[in-house]
Image 1 (cartoon, helix red, strand yellow):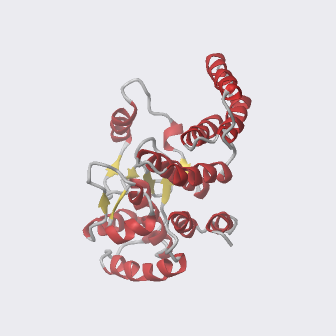
Image 2 (image 1 turned 180 degrees about the vertical axis):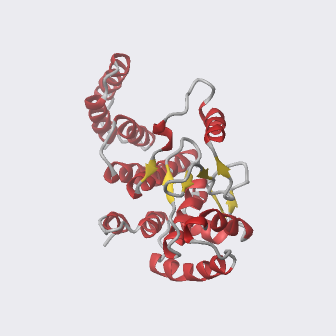
Image 3 (image 1 turned 90 degrees about the horizontal axis):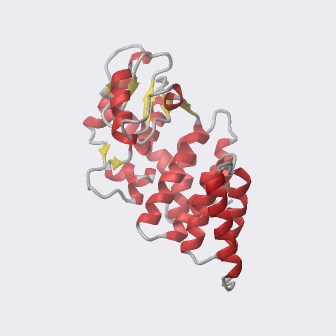
Length: 267
């Protein structure tokens, strides 16, 4: 079974094996990675975290869990340049530096093992966590509480002053949502670091993990263009047209397709 097949199979379990699926995503980019070994080794971190938690009802342990991880030096990456390893869970476990989403995946897996209620929140630009029913969110990078005003300020920093906070920004993320976001993050990071073949694996996975849409088909078309693969680019542009309702963008996509038709075939 390929890493991709193993990842998709993890989502078919009840409940989905989110952290294992994220490890199989990492295995697509690291031939030496053994997800079963990492899952076994995570028990040591679980013991370290558990030993530092206060004696409280499990519903009150989500923030202490995140603070405990921060004490163990799990932090948002601070290199200035974000790299693919900051989104790959096995690298983050080893280096203890990563993107908010990847830190959240580790926290969610530990919370699951310790029976602490915790959910992901698909907040724009900075993945967040919540205890079901709580009146605040939690930052996976240290456990800071974010109330409505804090979320507005966070949204302002990410998207600018013209965007109003809405319920859509605070939706709970299921396993598929998180793996799609992880795959999109990796696609972008691999492109930024001149690894289009790796980015193509991520772009393909995004489309397999959820219903196809305009943005993800366009993103894969751009990867195919970098790889000088007009047939793949043409396929995704044609699919993007099926989802496109904006007339101006439809004209742009149609022009791209005409340009491809005039270009000599390379594949």
